Amino acid sequence: MQSVEKGRLAMAPADAEAWRRLSGLRRDGDATGDALVAIGRAAAIDGSRPRDLREAASIYLARGDAETAFRLLDAATALGEWPRDTGDEIVVIWRRAWLYRAIESGFMQNVLLGDLGRPVRHVCIGTDERPPLAPRTILVVLGTESTDGATLAEAHAAGRGPIGVVHMGDERGDRDKSFYGHARFVLRHYVSGMGEAHPTPAGTVVQWIPNGYANGIGPRPTSAIVPATSRRYLCTFMGYPRQDPSREELTGLLEADQLPCAYVPTPAFSAGYPPSEYAIRLEDSVFALAPRGHAVESIRFFDALERGCIPVVVKASFADVGGPMAGAPVVRLSRWGELKGFLDGILALKEDERRERLLGMQRDAIAWWTEEKARWQAKVRGVVQQGFGLG
Image (cartoon, rainbow, N blue to C red; front, side):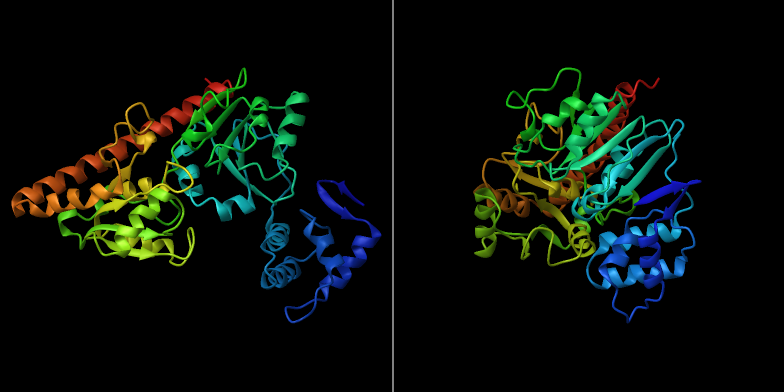
């Protein structure tokens, strides 16, 4: 049993003994599970030394348990306990595992939630840790793989809130969304998860938001973008070749060398090459192929725009007439078999005409994406402020 005394965590005798054993550990020692678990639960421990906590964290990190390692580091470096009064802040809560897996978390933090009209505190908690739901909290949920739905239901029943949700990772639109009714608003990716099949709960605003670029791809200042006519590759695809029949049609053409494109297959989703290399390759390409994955919306679409490429898509409903990205100045095809004809047509242009065409397409794409990021930031700010009753 542990108890809070004067804002710090006091240890029961069993935990104190565990701490004494842990205090003698060094990096080459063998940590006992009981000792580390006792310390890993703590947010602050009377009499603990930061150096010992850091050494214990290094043991856990070497064993591949980053979750406990970060809890120990938090205990070593935290200046105080969680504030009971967050003032006029908006609090955004992330589970640490989500930060590892959500490759567009930086775009979410810095663009979509980057200007909410109030101070924004981002909080990182453990996978099984209960989120500290203060007023004006936004809880980030990846799929529906945790107990966050039950936590929201309890908070709603107790009258705590208002609470908002960012729902990421529901690519196929088949995840449980019953917890939506416990939130004031839901910001979610993927058009496939919205519509008549998943009606909006009464009193809850459900707003689609763009995935945005992946971590390591942006932000990229427009002044640093290389002109289309100075790029080495006409088009590029770097990614996993087997994820969807439409993508397999494209990679089949690429593997048969039937397209004038740079092709770099990867062994799995977001694997094989660092994001920085992908970013470099994008910035040396005029067109970037953005085939669908599990969903019609592809993060590649936004990666391409951030790096000054012109995206090429096939039957992308989110970028077609009536979709949220309908105005995007991109290349739209009915099937990937049409790509060769389009590229051959570009190459057949006279040099001056081709230069003017490509630079014009790139300028349109950069200008549109710059305005679109600002528009969606303002849209999200409006939803959050209305949901939280902020003037």
